[in-house]
Length: 315
Image (cartoon, rainbow, N blue to C red; front, side, top):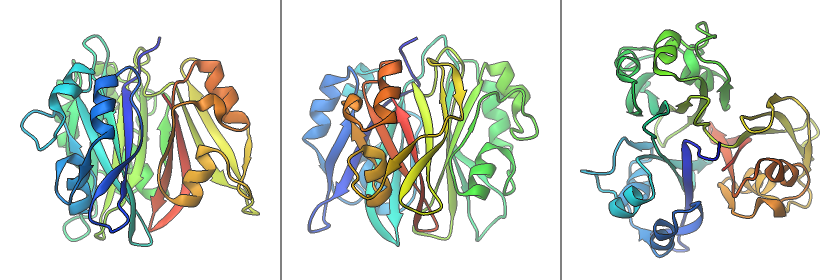
């Protein structure tokens, strides 16, 4: 099992004068042509997927690249990338970065990428904005469009309520926490990850990644939160299809002299990508080596203008 649903990621950073988004870092796997093109690009407000997320100040999901303002369609298609979501990160109302995560459906494996939104001016519930639904997911897609999620209900509603990333290992077995459990089972969806995301408005968003056991979301998923004394980050949860499933074994990373991607993401409020995770300090390096990870994506989860945790995805 080497393929994952999340196939690539890139971080775009504001230029010194604030007029452009410039390439910061990326994890592209074997997509060398796509990587080479991306590293030479920049985006103004409203240009391409990163520029649109920056301009509109909210997450943007592309269920397909054709017919959109995405500027690398041919290279993305050749790399097996089929959909993407762009997340602008605002810390204290200041844009730190735009994170773009690329996913790829595979013909024999279940997978979905969704964007949920609650518009405070219209409703108290979250509704589906759009989604990229893989094979055999027609009924699941239909149910998703008809679903309303109050705060704390369903996978996106839990992320919205807690203001933190939420991972569910068995969607069909948790109907009380995942309202579309039967449709998920019928579609072959097993795992789910929701990330809360804000915007410039008083709105709430959540991005969800769903997949079956044969196409894991990532090689490994970890959550890191600050310890009570604030001097270290604690790993409070980890899951890997390739290395024994769930783990509650704690680990820590110092914040006083940050050298790793996870600590840097926490302190800087922008995602950090390391395409040589064996160079990470401590536990992350050991985890990457155990599963053959080629990249580590450290995502600061920003809620109400503050970084509250770091989600680590090993690709």
